[in-house]
Length: 401
View (tube, one colour):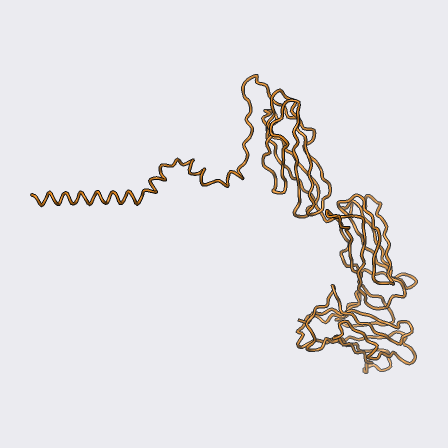
């Protein structure tokens, strides 16, 4: 009997200890369960208060109570043309012509780039508030339409939508691009090509001058006055630029920069000058034939190759109306840039006396790795004894990797 009492007491003791351990283990959970759900959410979401949608102003629904009256003259403003990265703003004015204070709150905006600021959040009767929308575009677009909602406690105008519109584009557009190469021969031996410089965002700009390193090239600009033509080009203003190459210019391929200076300035006050590349070929008493020869730009293409192995290309050439003693080109008469480039001109033995030659261009094995293409072509100048062409030039494109 005594042993039974002891056993019962021991079991009771173990149960008590188990309960204490269980309670201590789950104490944190028990404590958390005592926190109201809404208070817990509030503690865990400090950052959410910064981004949550603002509350709408409360409207006085009491019958016969004085009410505010929101009046705004414009709800849409057209910025017109804007340059990418440029920032502009416009201020809208909201008047209170009611009999009670007007509450003004900026609601949601249509993108992160549009920011609304209100000069005062409560407008007394007879007073006004200013709402400023700021827009800084991050991408070019033919048309943008951005804005914000303004919330008020005017029961007739609980939401006022404000919009800003316009286009985002580069300050200047160049046609047909930053390389002009469509040449046309004129009487007197001169050669001409034309391009255009256009502005989709400026109603009026001026070309103030040109800078050109080629002494035998000149440029002139004519303003486009035809409104229909400007509309067709989808711009607000522009010029046609004509480049003339004088007869004294060396025959063959050429490539040189032309800087077009304007009175337009960017946001930092820097002039918006444009640099285009004038590229092409002037026909002369020499003709070159071959798949590697591109006559329209006066260029031989070696392609892409390993600098260790190098590469050479041979094309056919003919001299029209050669001098009586025949065309003569000595090694010293060939100037190459880079100097590693090698050029050889030898008579075509398969057709002796025909004035035909074989022109070989080589970038020899082991020469330095380099890339010479449109941005910086290799150049070859050849002095000859031809009476109509004492010099002949062409370019070479290649990539020696």
